[in-house]
Length: 173
Image (cartoon, rainbow, N blue to C red; front, top):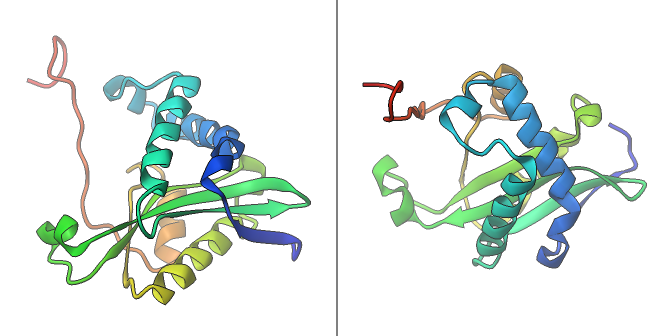
């Protein structure tokens, strides 16, 4: 990664700046796991961004939540949105403290493998540790083996597999 990449806090009012990265992630998900379009109906990237943007506004209004962007020469190469869960939200897993939930971590295709994602993960960890948070959660597509390896290199481990299927005609019985 170039030394000119800066990690900065993204003001919630500027969230539209990361819309193209969300759409790139959306496309990546459909390429990585084509069956996603069979079980999840969100195939239109513009509608997906509209809905995700609403969720970002909700999440970023909550205490402790934040968004970070990785920029080089003013261009956004990656971003993350993180919210904080209280212990009772994770009670099923026996958490004893708050957890940072990475709702999105996206890096532009041309910047993947350059250290941008690692810089974002490092910045997340630094920020939440300073707030006393000791657990980091995120979701990753089961067939996104590159992302799984990336997150494992950064200390995360698979815990649960999330299964989805339609119960309509032709779907799972």
